[in-house]
Figure 1 (cartoon, rainbow, N blue to C red):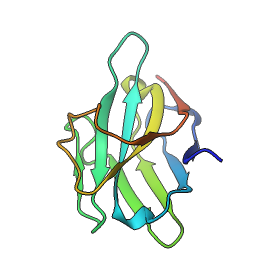
Figure 2: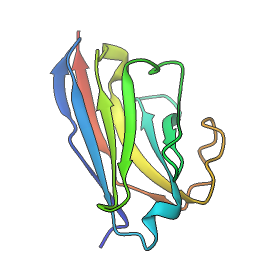
Figure 3: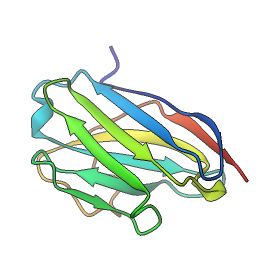
Length: 124
């Protein structure tokens, strides 16, 4: 069983909303920093939202005020509510897990586990 499995991607018009989910099979899920990354064609992978085990969250400027990350430790699940979507949000979205405290949102290399990704396409 894959440690992280994303779902919820799809196609939507600009201004619309999507909710991504990530189900984990990690032991002691509640002790992991969880994060959402995305990678657009021809661009580097970027961190867009991170959430500590306590629920404290941080966002990239590009999504702040539009996206909301949340987690349910009892259900071993991570979520990303995406509102007011723009064409530039089009990318493959990945969830990731890192044991302990979250690194800076710009860090992409430290994570222990990654999901397979889910495609989000926003049409203008």
